[in-house]
Length: 157
Image (tube, rainbow, N blue to C red):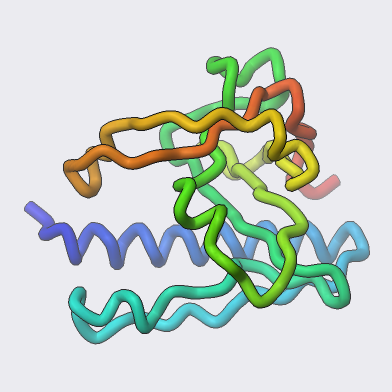
């Protein structure tokens, strides 16, 4: 059975792969998108020294945060099975960042479609406390009503 650190490293690897895919899709749409370098901490106790300041940077605009939902299939508002979309932990959203937020991009299980959540919708986001199985504790999250997200296909045509 993998340790929590092994699981974290596996998750980090998959997250980076998805982020690279999203950046490639954004570049195919004419965006100057650059993936943040992934730095792996030597030990769990040093995690605070390895917090990144965004997943993708758009030249002259700011940062994009990518969230992969490996257990959630969707292609549009109608097929997204929940009324809200988990954005991120409140503390992560609200912390100060060097670059302004351009969007959160939520990627479906199949890595074919995304839900794009812009920061100008934040006034409508809802705070909720949820049990996080990965960390075995309660965390506070932002959720965005799905009708405020823009759903897009990432498949190459």
